Structures are given as C-alpha cells and as structure tokens.
Length: 444
Image (tube, rainbow, N blue to C red; front, side, top):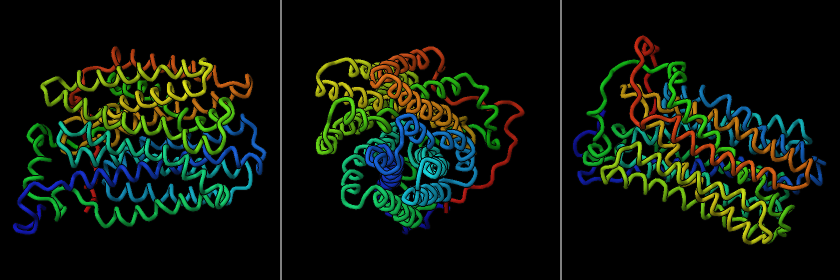
C-alpha cells in the first residue's frame, strides 16, 4: 500500500539513490571479502606452504559454489524478495569470511571458500531486482553502474586495507575484521529497505517517476520458469558473453597482486600504493558506462544500440591486457592494465543491466533469475580463469600466457554480443510455461 496522504513529502524525493547506495556498499563488502584472499595469499604461503597450483585452486574454489547457486538464489530473490534474500546472503558470506581465520591448511581453506561462494551468489540477483523495483528504464544503466562500481571499489580497497590489516593483525585477523563489516551492513539494510510503495520516505512525485514504465507491463502471468529462459538465444548469448568478461576481470580480482609482486618486482609498499590505480580507473569506468548508455537512450537511440555499443567497445578496449604481458616497462604494463580494467567495467555496467531490459513484461518479473543465469555462466569462467592462469604460471614461471589468453577471450566477447545476443527488448512470455506460481515478495 502507498503511504497515507501527508506522511510522505510532496516534492520528488531521491530515496531510490539511497537504496542503490546500500547495494553499492554491499557489493563493495562482497568484493573485499572475496579479494582479501588474493591480497593475503603471498603472506599466508609462508605459514601454510601453498604451491602456485594449490593457490590457483583456492582462488578459484569460491567460484565453484558461486556459479552453481546463482540460478537457485536468483530464483529465491524473485520468489521471496530483495529485502530478505539480500540480508541472508550478506550475513552468510560475512560469517564464512570471518571463519577463514580458523583455517589450518589447504583443505579447511578450500571448504571455507566454497561456503563463502554459496552466500555471495545472492548478491547480484538481489541488486538487479532492486534496480528493477526502484528505477525507470532510462535510469537503470546508471543505477547498475553505481552498484556494480562497488565491485571495483571493494577490489581497490582490498589491497591497501587488507595489506594494512595483515601488517597490523596478521592474515587471520584481517579476515575477522572484514567479515564483521558485513554484519553491520545487514543491520542497516534491515532497518532502511522497503519497496517504493511501502517506503514512508518516498514522495508521490518520486513514486510516479519510478513507475513511469508500469504502463508497459502487459501480463499478469505467473513467474516464467528458468528452464524456458534457458531455451532463449539471447539469454544464452548473454551468459556466454558474461563468461568472457569474467575471464578477463577475475585476473584483477585474483592474480593481480601476485603479478605485480612476482612478475614486475613491486615491493609491499609499492603494491599498497600503485596497485590501487587500475581499481580507480575501473571504478570510473563503471559510472561512465552507465551514464553513456542511459544518455544514448534519452537521446532516442534504441536499447539495443545503447547497450551493445558500450559493451562491445568496452570489451574491445579490455583486450589490451595482452599487451601488458609483453612490454618491458613495469609502469607501462600497469598503465595498460589500468586501461584494460577500466574498459571491461565500462562494458560490465551494461551487461548487468541487460536482465532488467529483457525480463518479460509480467507482473512477476524474473530479472533475478536471468541475472542468476548469466552470472552462473560467468563464474564458471571465474573458476577456470585463476586456476588456468595459476597452472600456466606454475609450468612456465610467467604470466605472459595467461594474459594473452585473456586478451583473446575479450575479443571473443565482442563477437558474441554482436552476433549471438539478439535485440535488447523484453522477451515474449512462452506459451504454457508461465504457470509456476511464485509466493508474494516479503520486502515489507
């Protein structure tokens, strides 16, 4: 029910931006919690004696469960709502981040990383649902860029923060502190989050702005089955394209600190200072990608052009990661990696917006499920990428082969989005496949 007359301000409020700020903070915490292992790993090896091959398996273990549980948790987000599922996901992964402190070797570390990935699988489907609930179509890429930039912010902050915590408290203490931050977020989220029509701070003017696309809703059908979504070529193309994006981006999340230290000879101090530069560029890339795409929509371009042009241009720019492997100068390599990271995040903003663009126009949207499908495929690549790069590094003693492979995969992504993904428009509701009832959201 909407707020009673007089309980909400009449001017257009901007509570939708507060909601997406909460999502940004959750994703930032998410990426600190998943990236802290890559930062702490060089210092954990001295105590635990992990080889490069075992380190690669540890860095990739998170993605095994993260991939498998994307579709189930995306489905649960669509079924039970953003508020409950986002809170549950953050609480789960925060507890298992802190539990890393009690690990005593490869087996216990591997188990904790698997459980961490299970909880974090709910993050992006919940953010997608939030954007669909709180933003009109012409603002969704900007909103998606804001929450997705939390991934870059978290990755960027993980390097100096975790490095400082390791130096101060040791690697075990660093996991306890970073895990505790998420539990604070859960308390704030539970207090603040409501759906637009249930939030007492939202004015009628903002509610009308948010719901300006509601007239385009054409069906009261029950929730679309995920099996029917998997039969759609555009959904498959999105999944494969996002997998290519993940192969590139997870180098920065996993092996990047080790690359600077082992391959380019950066000291701990240089890593803490200069290792943040690609993250800063990537952070800006998220905002720029969303702003450019939404501006193209407002200027009358089709969603297909507005989204695909930014995705293809960004992924093509990210392919310069291959050049970073072969240049002699460490500082030029760092600059190329920064450009690559910024380009791939420019593309990522539109990639994570696509589920809200193509979700069928039904009263019971399946945007969380679609995000889960493309995330599941992307994080199979997230598991393969660090393990493969670790194997290449272990056998050759160099990151060159892994970075060249990443550049080739970036070009492959361009081809997929151009020729496999179809027009960016709401998918038709499949006949006879819309009768799987979904329980009412429990966001209140």
